[in-house]
Amino acid sequence: MDMVWIVLAVGAGACLALQASANGSLRGNLADPRYAAFFSICGTIVTAIVVMLFLRPSPPSLNAIRSAPWWNWIGGPLGALIVLAGAALTPKLGAAAFIAAMVGGQLFCSLLLDHFGFMNVPQQGLTLGRLTGAMMVFAGVVLVKYW
Image (tube, rainbow, N blue to C red; front, top):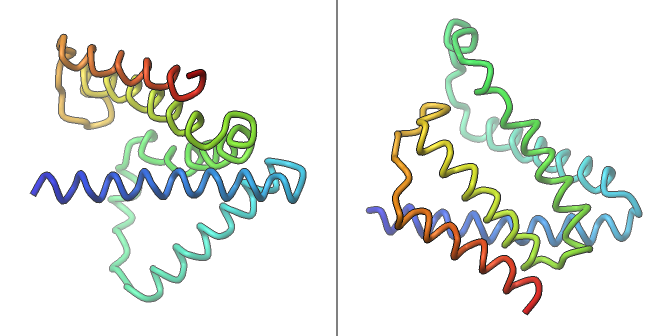
């Protein structure tokens, strides 16, 4: 079953590369990465509304909303920053270098989240294998951009 989740994650990664490239191109047409990010996020909102209307999930209780930790609510703003970064940086770095650098940043942050068990992530310590893998990804970023 893990392979199914990995394939889905790879698909999500492909979507991130497509999104960054589309937003970078939109930035070129609109001349400002902020507008590219704005219109991309508007598309996200419309898509979310359509999905919610189609699926009609039961709303969470007010108690569940109130009891969620503050950091549960930063996904939207962080997503907006990722969209803005894609729009601003993909035209400067190219899609592959931008995504490679994003993966490097994701991996570094993920290792910290795992090691300390922050944000309800299952705690997994740093090992030589995990650190070596992370260093290989960072080497890949350099190779993708400069080789």
